Length: 277
Image 1 (tube, one colour):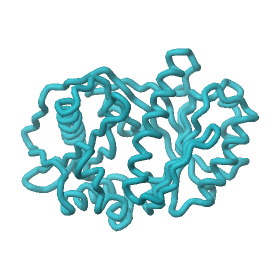
Image 2 (cartoon, rainbow, N blue to C red):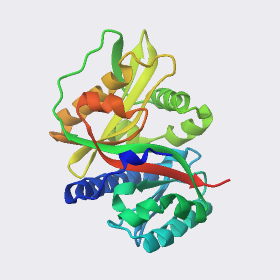
Image 3 (cartoon, rainbow, N blue to C red):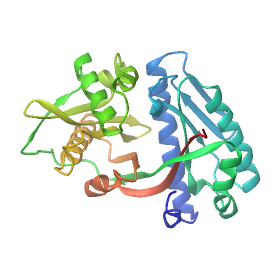
């Protein structure tokens, strides 16, 4: 469970930040899904955005609720509808639920309402944002940076994420190999230590912001600043190319401290749900 202390009240400012975070997810994952196949399930239903790539890589199959100030009864309806999308979709997927969209009663009833809909809490995270660009050009004494441009680079990027999130490499490779999005549009970088890929990050323009995507550090190489350095590199290059000043991302709870050091602020708690066993 996410610590309930992380679920803040719905002030106007908080709600606007949450809506921004939801919209950034919907915009970026539309491109992700269509990058994998032009037949991807990309729909905007009443109160629900579906961005389903049909990939074996769970993070590429997304459903999220989009209505602000959701009450308890409407939340119940939307969670059942979201669970139906998860059941019908090809491949595993997740519901990303931004809890600041819920009113107090809906939030208090969320655990039982999700269980009733056949959903199971998977892990927690947070939407983050900041007017932090441009950043200084990053350096790290251990690292060189290479922009992702080849299939070998994509496989290395996939393997870093697979190892970091404890997923089979072949599954994550299926989600990234052949990607025109990552080689042509996303400012995606590998961090190399003595020629070995040890971390990766990408930044993509989305509605006047840079969105940081798929940051990972290989197990055994954490706590050396590699993830922070390659994130800075992706954001630096993205800002140089676009002139943008605001950046956003969605972080796991474990990863969030890396981004606060860069200058991001947590703005919207997220709960991730899969189908119950």
